Length: 206
Image 1 (tube, helix red, strand yellow):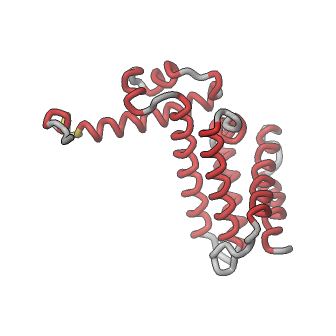
Image 2: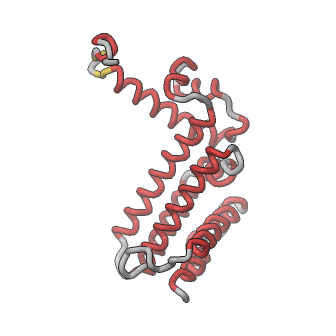
Image 3: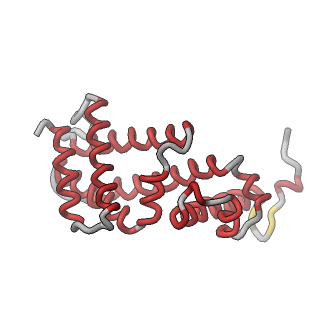
């Protein structure tokens, strides 16, 4: 059914669709803030709405429940994070090992720079629901592909064709992060990156 002319009219220079998209972005930003401060399991839809400066009516315009918002906010964080990693890889000089080190440095710097979000999206997201676990698994798979491509001389991921090995390395890189977070980021970042690099080099057979 075609949209009505009223639904498509522009308000203060924005269409209804643009305003809905803007409200959705406000909810995503608010969710990342609230989940980072309170933890997902302690947060309520009302708290997210208050942080976004919007009513629950608008919440349900964009999301069916808080779990759907969690998945969407997690994916938004991952898109930002992977963008930062890709940028670090592109700007790094040297070969695959140097690019991988730059990528890991960017990864751990992002976690340290956003400690609340890091705790939520690394610690609390696991085990929330099958849908959330599926989003987490997809991000881990993407991370493994990125590491393998970065370490491959041809940039094609041939550094590790064994998916189990990739999964193990990604798990190790993340557990290094979790240990570092739990310690209050006590170790210098170069030591953290060094530990993760030794794991990643397994993909090159070293």
